[in-house]
Length: 297
Ligand code: NAP
Image (cartoon, rainbow, N blue to C red; front, side, top):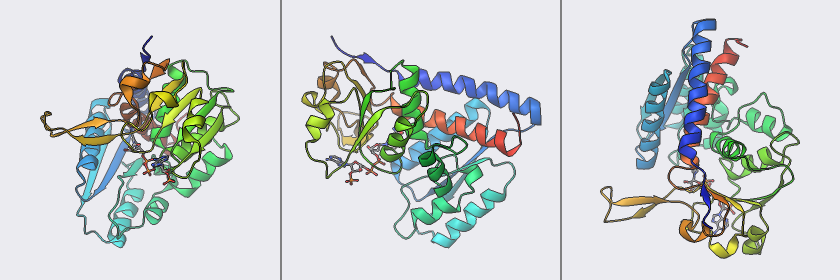
């Protein structure tokens, strides 16, 4: 029997509806409208699309949003000065610096420059440390937080499950492995993290109750890497040239969807799986940041 789809769009809308309620509560309690600033350096087409999507969702949920667009030639010091301005700006509660950044700019320095209280992307070393320590007062990166919520809200039992995470990036794979292996409710998984140097990858994948692909290789996960009845989450977003499409390309994930969905119990589509969750968690984190900055309960 083909797998049931996990509808990331619908689950993201549930979260957005909850965020709208939180925004109204914050406005009533403190007269504050949560504000998100997105910093875009250069004109990477995928980044421009993401940033526009974020603007639109902010407007739809009734949040304040600001965009800082800088040329690809921006010096690191200029970007850091812009971040510092946003750190001081009262109407901004969350700051996101869209990656990738041009090569002359150190991502480390940029992530460390964002005030930890406004670090709604969860990349500041303080928030990374809090996640590693199991301290829930920090911010967790949006894509792995979105994957976690997808699993929880789809009724997937994580406790005691063997979760295989393909990819160890600091944006997705590594934080996800930390979230799922916490000694906490909706976690307690046995997590195996795989990467480009892993041996016996297919065999490890086949032993997964939950297989999460976040590597950026189109269709990498084949049906023979998935055991019958597994839950498969596809984080990958890959552009493939497609002359038959209006845009000239189509988006595919890291999973060979058609074949794998014949084996899996639950599977996320691309697009419409993890993508919408990332934005929903960003909005959630921004409202939480605003609440914390204003001492609201
Ligand atoms: P990344 O920084 O390039 O990291 C890729 C990871 O995959 C690395 O750990 C790499 O191993 C591993 N890898 C690459 N090729 C592999 C292979 N053939 N076998 C095993 N492991 C392999 O990428 P990322 O930022 O984590 O993103 C991963 C994917 O998720 C991309 O398609 C990206 O577009 C997508 N993404 C989606 C969202 C969303 O909102 N849906 C958000 C972020 C990212 P090494 O560490 O050994 O190099």
